[in-house]
Amino acid sequence: MGNLAASVRAMEPAPAAETVDRDADARRWIAALRASGVVRDDAAARLHALLLRAARFELGRRPESLEGAARETIDDLAMQSADDALSAILSKLDEYRFESRFTTWAYKFAILDAAMRARRRAWQHRELPTEPDDWSGPPARALVTSSARSYSPMFRSTSSRSGSARPAGPCTRPSTTPGGSCGPRSELKMTSSPDSRRVSKRLLAALLGPPGPEVTCEQCFAVLDAYVEHELAGEDADARVPGMRARLEGCPACAEEHDSLRDLTVSETGERI
Image: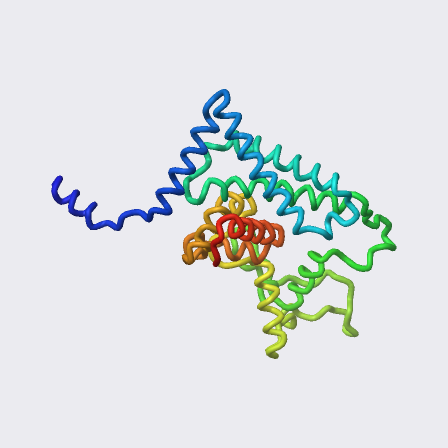
């Protein structure tokens, strides 16, 4: 049995030197950050410098959010982001899974913090109308819901909590037809034109969400560094992290942070996708 196990191990491909070096570098970072005294202080200072560069990189990608901000204000935002990112990293070292470079994993904390600060600042001096006359129409969600009820066949009948369809009852809404009735529910049918079918499919997709596993913003952030590393390695990142592509396509904030982390990692390592 021992000879068989040794033979199997000999047949397995050896890990790439880059992966070994990457893991070794990550272990050095973690060991230094968990140490005490001068060793820990030096590692924290070096990491803070990297996080500060990442925060400045992210803020530099958001000129519209920082329009009118003085250079000192932007530098202060970057410093705050680096400080908070370092604090978060030191408290989450156990969550690092060696699925990416340690620096890629660390960068995402600074990018997220800087992005949130930029978004908040963009809204500091804006006011939303509060008077009814200032609103031009119902919220977008209400429009989608009302349109979906007009087009989608799922609304031809109502369902009970158990999922079984209930027969349509008499209409209790105000009369809208000359005969004094809204007409039977069977008249609420989707037309068979190609345009109406396309509209129905789009509305259903918006209501039901993407197929397959659904990734939340928190889950996206947790695996963002690994996803970027798969991309940089030329691997099928979408297959390695199912549901991630749908999240990036459906969440502008997650997509922005993904693009920033990818581009920053490329600029730091010289790799290309």
